[in-house]
Image (cartoon, rainbow, N blue to C red; front, side):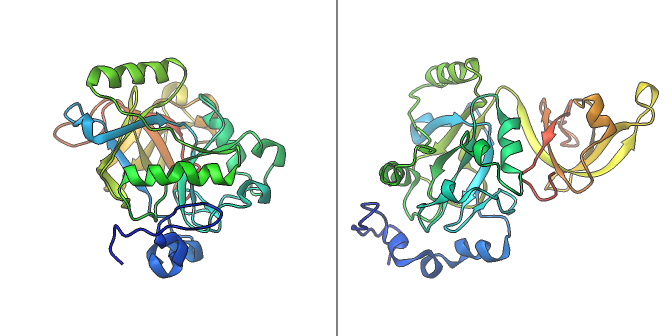
Length: 300
């Protein structure tokens, strides 16, 4: 079977690639291995949008401020590979192949989504407020435009109102992109995502996927708590953090008084805002704490 081969005819979901029909355990063993060992799922990650991106080759969607959810065909996982304890009804009838999306309550309600998802014993009533916003089919062998074309009828066949496709659209010019960005952010949204239409699903960070937000942000692991001075004496002064690339620096602002008294534990991951990078060292400029990454290993 070639990478782009297709087959029709699954009774419930209509047309889907042969890869799904034959079973992911045979066709894509690497994608289902994570179900057994709880290693992080092989998700695509976004680079920060640059103005030189050729917009004609990209599809655009809203960036949802929720918790990344990866359905591996059997269970929901966080981006870090931890199991999400969803009620049985929430995932009943879902396909036995991967779906990548965002568990989302609504614009500006990130903390609420995190609170629901992190519970080891699911709050049934709270889960009724969550939507699974699906933006990709990782095991589909086609380009993103083809995956998106397969996604919409698949979810329509599920007929579950809390499982929704992320709508994609074209921006013909930077002005159109800026107008869409201003509209989403002005209505309380987080920003936009740009996905290269011709790209195949591949794990890791690349220019196949971009995020456009009002500010820059990134993740880092907490290494140590640095003591405060002056008015912060006796509580947290700063976090010593390390990026996935091994770069260490301090984050000393953005904390509430409660967070300074009870800071993110060493080993947990946090998201920070920043304004560009120092050219000489590569250290983020004006790094400020944003939130704990509950969906990363060590998050709480």
